Image 1 (cartoon, rainbow, N blue to C red):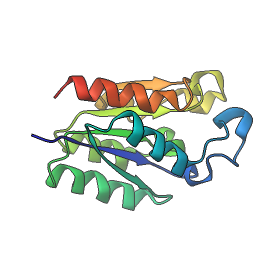
Image 2 (tube, one colour):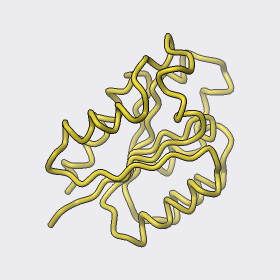
Image 3 (cartoon, helix red, strand yellow):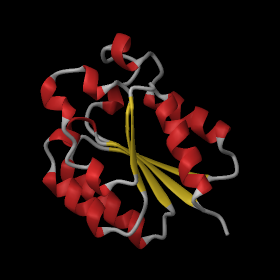
Amino acid sequence: MEHTILVLNGPNLNLLGTREPEKYGQITLEELEVDLRRDFPHIQLSFYQSNHEGELIDRLHQAYESGVSGIVFNPGAYTHTSVALRDAIKAIDLPVVEVHISNVYARESFRHFSYLAPVCAGQISGLGIGGYNLAIRWLAMEF
C-alpha cells in the first residue's frame, strides 16, 4: 500500500529564500519540495501552500477525505491565532506534525503559544528546514 504525506505550508512560506534569510534560510519552497522528493522517493508527497486560512482548512479536510496517511504542517503565524485550524486538525483522524523553521520559543513572546500543538501528534521547532525531513521520517515510521 502506498502512503501519501501532505506537506502543508501556511502564510508567507511562499517567500522562503527571500524573506528574512538569516532566520528562515535561503532555500525556496520549490527547492524544499524537490529535496524532500529526492530524500523520500518511496513516499508519495503532496505539497500545498496558501496564505489563506480557509484554504488551509479545506486542504486539511480534503486530505482526510482522500486517505492521506499523515500531514506535515507549517502553519506560520496562524499557529498563534487560529482556533479554526485547531478545530480542523482535531476534526480529522490523521497524525499531524507541526513544523516551524525558526525556534518560535526564542522569538517574540506572542509566538510562544500554539493553538495547534495540543491537537497535533508532535511539534518540531527551530531545526530549520530539516524539521520537515524529521517530520516525514516520523510519519513514515507510523505506517
